[in-house]
Length: 528
Image 1 (tube, rainbow, N blue to C red):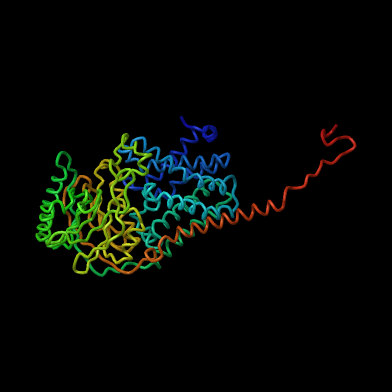
Image 2 (cartoon, rainbow, N blue to C red):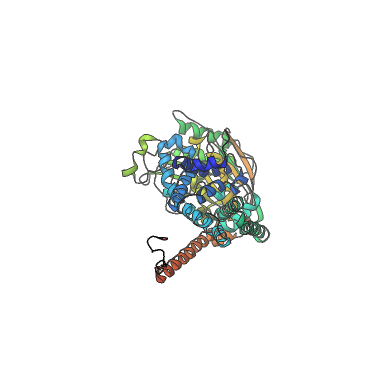
């Protein structure tokens, strides 16, 4: 049955219909991310949500639509957590969705009815800034980290990667929201099309300027990096079986002139100090392939209390002493926030039964022949500041050791692998994303793909000829400047609104003028 415009307006007048529409509209941007990877859709994905919010009958309802849309967005980008956290996934999405309530209020504030040219211009700056604040707040590790930032949908678009080298993923998110706002105005408000078109032209000009003027990484060397991906190994004795499979795959690299071998997250399930036999086997492998091996130990340490996830470098003589302990842990997956209050999550899903311990600082390791590597573990590759700090500390090559075996049949492995392209482009350093079970991927210093992905069905080792580059990108030099600019825009808005409110209060209420009397009527009863 085809519904008319009047039918849709009537249905959206129902709180239930409107709420469902808001959740669905908020979920639409997920199609821009891998695996669908419809990157172009990100430029219009927010339009239905914006149109819905601007039509809200009240400011309170607009905030409510913002919250429900945020719930839909967070649930969509984290849907692969449902088998692990079950109903708790919805609870988290609802809590984080509330961050979009102010964004919804501001959307109606500037775009409701027939906005003036000034309101449209202001919306092109204010709404992207408010969106960026949402992304900044939810990027805190304790709230789940920066997974599903809108700008990361552009990981495979060369002009967007150039912009990332200037302002990081934050600049991409800002410009994407601005484009969506402009398109929404073009669709809904004919009288305000001129400033909307101007906004689109300005965005295109900024992209062109970045393309022409931003510095390009100068390739000045190459290294051969091997990735070992054992694949899914289940059952009793899984840690021993995985080690044996990784050992077999690593032996196949002998004679291939590799500079470094990288194993995935939790590739070694025992502390090497407690298992000198495994340390000896790794040293023998290093001698056989004539390269150091970066493994990841997920085990209770013998020299201090607790379980750590650690990148450990092993050379021909055994562990070299270079070790990085994971600093940013996955909420519920590796620790339970406020366990005394939320510990019940372990009874309804696969939340961590024991909290992992945290490292205290990032580490740059010397591999040999002047190559310096900066390791990260798992979802740390989603944090732009971590890769930026490693690049500024002298890392020639960024590495992320990951394991997404719990989410093999979802979109999570491909989305995770795509993040490394952005980190490479932001820093001007190549990045290797090595996993246990796929997707493993390698990117050059401009974020371009190097070689083929190892998919979730692969159990193999692969060698990548990785270009090296030096120099400092604008993002590596200046950091999250789009975030600071967004804060200034919102501060200016607050100051302007405050000054306007003060002027109104000082002016006081308008004087009351009684109705005029005539010979045939009274003020109370005109005409009588």
